[in-house]
Amino acid sequence: MNLGIPIEMSGDNRLALTPQSVELLVEAGHSVFVEKDAGKRTHFFDEKFEAAGAKIIYSHEEVFGRSDVVVKSDHLMPQELELIQEEQILLAFHHLAVSDPKTVQKLTEQKATVIGYELIEDEDGVLPVLYPTSEIAGQMSIQVASEYMKIPRGGKGIVLGGIPGVPPAVVVILGAGTVGRNACMAALGMGAQVIVLDKDIRKLREIERLFKKDAITAIATRKSIEEALTLADVVIGAILIRGEKSPHVVSKKMLKKMKKGALVIDMSIDQGGCFETSRPTTPKSPVYMVDGVMHFCIPNIPSCVGRTGTLALNNVLYPYVQQLADLGIEESLKANPSLRKGLYIYRGIPIHPVIEKMFGLRVKDIDSLL
Image (tube, rainbow, N blue to C red; front, top):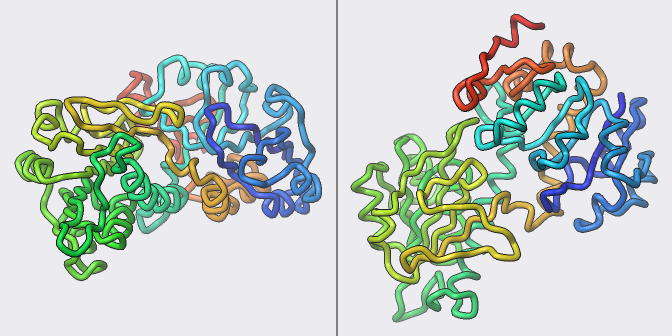
C-alpha cells in the first residue's frame, strides 16, 4: 500500500509518524512518500526518512496523488480538498463537528474514507490516540498561563505559585478529563491554588485521589462555575464531548464577573470552544481581550511542542496504520472495533452521527457495509 505524509498546511509542527515507524512499514512491503521538509521543524529531517526507506516528494499535490492513505496530524485545509483522490483514506484529527459543509461534501463526493484520531476508542472507553495529545495539552496550558500572566505579555504580573507572604494564583479548570487532570497536576506542581469543576462525580473523585485533596473540586453547575470565575486569575477550558462541538459553559454575561486582567485559556477551541467569547487565534496573534479578560485560544496547542507531540502521536497511531496498510481498509475495520469507532465517513458514506446532526446527511451503520 502507498502511504503519504504531507507537510501540514495549517502550520501544525507535528508529524503523524516518525522515521522508525516508516522503516517498519517499508520493511513490511509498503511505500511511504514524505513531503520534503515535512519533519524539519521537529528535527525529523529528510535524511532520516530516506534512510528509513521513504521516498522524498517535492510537492504537496504529488503526495496526495500517489497515496492510497494520507497520514496527517491536523485537519484538512480548504486548499487540500481538491487534492483528495477518489476512494482515498484520510487519517487526521479531523474534528468534522466544527468543519464546514463544503469539506464534508467533497469527502463524500470523492468516496473518501475519513478516520478521526479523536474518535478512535478502545474496549475500555479510552480514546487512545487522543489521550497523549490531551496529556500534552493539559500540561502546556499551565506553561502558557505562567507566561501570559507576565506583564510583558499583557498579564497582570502574577507568579502562579506565589511566595511566602503573597498568596498563589487561583487556577480554575473546567473539566476533569485528561486535559483537566494534567492541567491540575501542572498547576499544583507550580504551587497554584486549583479549583476543578466537572459534572461527573467519578472524575472529581479521581482528581481527589490523585492529588490528595490538594485541589478543590466541585460539581459543575451554572452557579458553581460563576462563583469560581469570580475567584479566578486563570481559567482553563477543558470540556470535551466526544466527536461533537463543545458547549459554551461560560457565557458573555458570566465572563463579565471575572477579575480584570484574568486569563482564559480555551483548550476546547479545536471543538469550537467552551467560552461564548472564544474564537481561534494564531501563534502570531495568540491573545485578545474581552471585557478586560485576556483570551488565549490557539487550536492544537501540542503543536507548539511538535517533537514531543510527534513522538506521542506516533507511539499510539503506528499500530493502527500498520494494520491498515497490511490488511486494507475493509479487513482492518472488521478486525479492529477501535478503528471502526474512528470512522466519520466510509467510502463516501457518512457513518458518524455528528455528520447527520451537523450537516443533515443520513448516516449508515458501518456493520451493515462490511
